[in-house]
Each structure stands twice: as structure tokens, then as C-alpha cells.
Image (cartoon, rainbow, N blue to C red; front, top):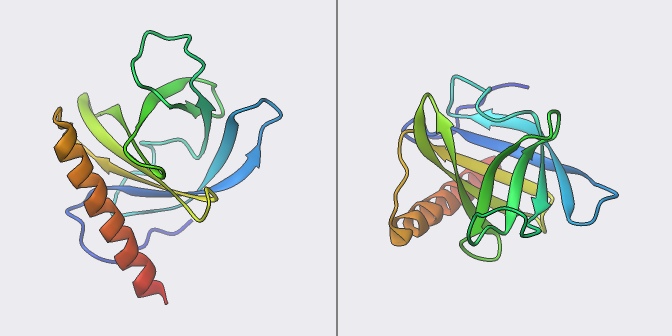
Length: 146
């Protein structure tokens, strides 16, 4: 896996995952890390992750999916829906709550995770704005590869 530098993004890490398989358990999707950009550390997210559909067993509100470390089966965060392909969650990075934006692309075969380290807006509108910026950045990256 090689680190790529495509365009400056204020050092916000972006992780690129690819769909690896559907579990025999209903509602579980597995993804494997393919690349990461704009970051010096690749250890923020595990190389193998999966998503479980929320079954309503936790006290969390409005969670659509759970991000799970596929190797340890530990839940990392709940994902809340922004739109049909975009979700957000939070993760503690270096002892600070950070925003994660998840964008499922190519009919769910590719996943982009953008981490806003040390920044977690409580206002929904700001999370939506950051998700739109992430989508614009991904479009720029894809256009530069053509």
C-alpha cells in the first residue's frame, strides 16, 4: 500500500476501502483498506472493517449502521445517515472526539472515510457542509485520475 498525495486537504486523513464480501449474516458488509491519503498514520482505522445494520439493541439514537473492527468484532462508532450514500460518526483520535464522514460510492463497492481530527461539530448543518466538501474533494480526486 502506497501513500499518495493528490491535493492539499489540510492534512485531513482519507481512507479508501473496497467491498470485500457480504457476510452470511444478514445486513453485514465487509470492506478492506485499499489506500489512504493525506495522513502520516494509517492506524486510525483498522485495515478490515464491517458494517452491521442497527438492530435496535443499544441505547443510541438514529443509528443506521455500526462500524465494526472486523478482526476484533469491536464496535467503533454508530453511523447516522446524512443522505442515501453519506453517513457520519465519531471516533476518539489522540484523546479528542473527531468527525468521520463515510461516503459509499459505486453502488456500495467503494467507501471513502474522511476524518476531521480534533473537530466534531454538534450542529447538523455544519456536518452536512463538511460532507459536501468531502464529496467535492472526492470528485476532484477522481477527475485527476482520468
